Length: 254
Image (cartoon, one colour):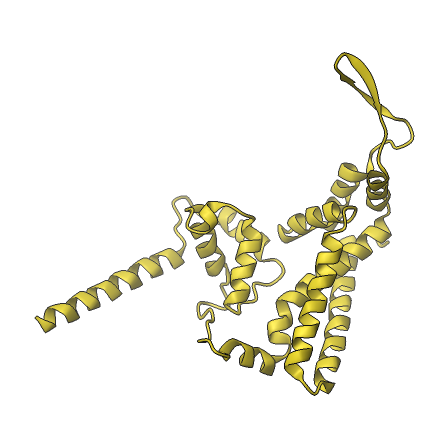
């Protein structure tokens, strides 16, 4: 594996994503019932993600990687953390602990041994992480990967709901959702905020990009003391204006 693992990872990831997209688009293009194929590809993508993330051996390193990668951490550091956390366990010499005054010998289970083996096999681990990251990226892009089917599904029986805020400053959307969640107005402030944000972004047809979480963190660290995101001022001003107009219209009718 190249020393510049960050570059290698991104190159392999982008290549993997493009290969999946090319295959999906080819299948969609030749389909007679495009909506059926769109649903079929969506189910297949979700199945692959759920199958890998539900694997008791792969689940921990995948979840650990996902959190650190979204945060913008260095790939070398992430792999080293996974290796140290799940790989550096002695499965040859048993370890011991005291229970009820007696020394009990404990051996690693087959599942724990398999996890250790995976964490120490960098090439195999990276292959799994790249595949999982790629399919999660495909899952997010599916609504826009086939433009025409997306428009039909969004407007079918429902009013289209899209984020019309700044496309250049997508951090505004993130700030809004984080604020609502922190205030306990979404799921009582419970649940993984990154997944909540991504789910709501998908609902509004907004592609946050791969580094949205690290961009958000950077904006907090770079902000001056007492900084207030403009998005909250916009909302407050707009609502007060709405309320003022409504009251004026009511007074005119009197």
